[in-house]
Each structure stands twice: as structure tokens, then as C-alpha cells.
Length: 380
Image 1 (tube, helix red, strand yellow):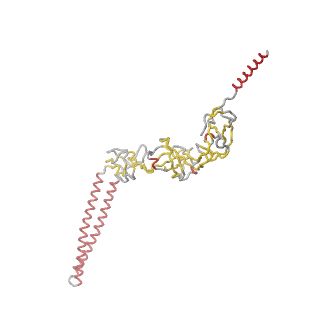
Image 2 (tube, helix red, strand yellow):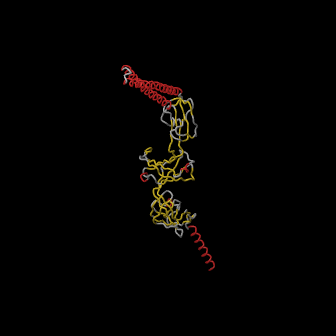
Image 3 (tube, helix red, strand yellow):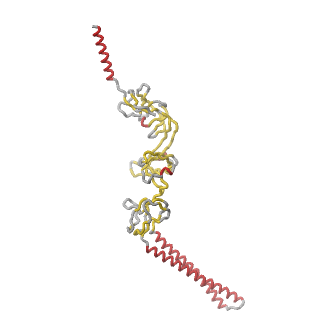
């Protein structure tokens, strides 16, 4: 009988242990990091994609309408400042320039002839005046010689004036001819050419429907222009350091410096007003492989602390608290005081010490204060 009773008691204890084990709360899996010391910066970033821009870029059109006579460059060519890129048909203007040059040459030759005669008349007048003092020349002869000398001198001055008129006409003709030639305003690279020989083009505002005849870019100097929310813009000043990332180079991060903060607000979207901020690359060698037009993001550092206790920003709850995994693997909720913060790290002024385990998977099901947790992996 006693043996039967002991057997019943043993089975009962086993059943109780099984029920307790089945009803026991299972540890929730959590991702953790270890609080560490490091650098934290307060930053602001663009609200919409920024753009890589060339310091000099020109959408060029001839100043007058006409038929394309010559295209002297190709897309991708490097050109020098002042080089002719495109020329309209201008045979008539070339002829007018040649005519003006010949007229100028004829005026110069006429001036030489007239002025030589004026010099001869002046010498003759001076000779007769000398003879008159010795009573060897009549007053009438002297008067005629002096009058002729003055007349010849006036003719010389008139000839010189006609040269200036001819030169002015030549410059007018040359200016008219120059308006048919499209020159590079700066050294750069030809990006695009719109037009073919024989086509008629008219200078109009450059749009998608009316592209420029020649798109010229100076790729030797690039910068970033990005829209920053109007709320963040007042804290930004030229000279602040910036970090530049591009979709085309996801594994690279470029360093830059703010060069300009626009003095006006862009209101293209009523509910999203922004201020354009420009930043230069710190090292020109960084952007040798970049192209104007690439999309870019600009993160500007407003303030930075090099050695503080920090946590990943994703670990913080809305009420400035964090979830700590204590030595017994129980989740504790703890209030913290924060300092500088960005999207990656937040400075912890009070509430967490270096080495403590902090949960970053705060949105996972079952993660709550008082729950038993099991870390998936140790943080850095």
C-alpha cells in the first residue's frame, strides 16, 4: 500500500513539473548592443534628393536666327574658351567684312597721299615765307602758298577721319559676322549638340521642347546642391563640414564643406518649403569619376562630440527611455538623458553606463518590461 502511495505521489510531482514547464514563459529573442564610447554628431540632411552640379554649365544658342552652316565640334570634345563651336550660314556677312576691310585699306592709302601733299605744301609755304623776309617773294605768292598748305592739312585730317569711319564700319560688319558664330564662353566639355547642318534654328528660351544648340559643361569643378527643410536651414552656415553620398556610388562617402546657403526659400511645394544649400568637395580628386546630374544626399554636421557614451538611435523609445537586459536576462525599462543625436547614434548623458546591454529590437513581439529575454548576438 505504501509503495502504491509513493508511486502516485511521484507521478503527481512529475505531472506538476510538466504543467509548470509548459506554462513557463519562454524567453523572447532580442537583438542587443553594448553601450560604448565614441563620436556623436548632430546633423541635418536634405529632404529631397540633391544634385551634382558643375560650377560652370551653359546651354548655348546663337544670338540670331539662321541656318546651320558648320558644326565644328563633336559631343565629348574638350574645347577652349573662345573656340568656335557652331557657325550659321554667313557668306554674305563674310563678303561685307571683306568689303569693309578693303574700304579701310583704300582710306589708309588715300590718307597717305593727301598727307604727303599737305607736307609738301607746308614746306613750300615755309620756303616762300623765308624768301618774303628777304623781299624775294611777293605777298600774293606767299598768301597762296599758305592757304594751299592749310587746305592740304585740312584734307589730311579729313582723310584720317575717313579712316576711322571705315574702321568703325569694318567693326560693325565683323560684329554682325560674329553673331553667326557660337563660341565657348569657358573651357569645358561638349555634353550635347542639338541640330544638323542645314537646319534652321531660332534663339528661344531653353526648355525640354527647345533644347540648346550646344550644352557645354566644365567638369573640372563640381559641387552639390541640395534642398534642406526651412526648419533646419537657420542652423547652417558656410564652412560647416558635410558628408556626401551618391546613389551611383553606394559604397563611398565623400567629405565636403558648405559653400553657400541660399538667401530665399523655395516654395515649389506648399507643404514642403526648403532652402537650397551648396557644398564643395574637400578633395577635387574625389569627383573625377562623377557626372553632373547625379543624385546626391548631403548630411551637414552642426555640432560634434568625439568621446561620449552612445547608443544606436533605433534603441531609444519615444519617452527618452531604453530597454536594458540585466544580468538575470530580465528586461528593464530605464529613463535616460540624451545629448547630440543623428539617425545613427545618440549621446547618452545619464542613465546607461559603458558595457551595459541595450535592446535594439524594441518593436519585436513580446519585448516588454519584465519579460525574460535571450540575446541573439552580442553587440560590438
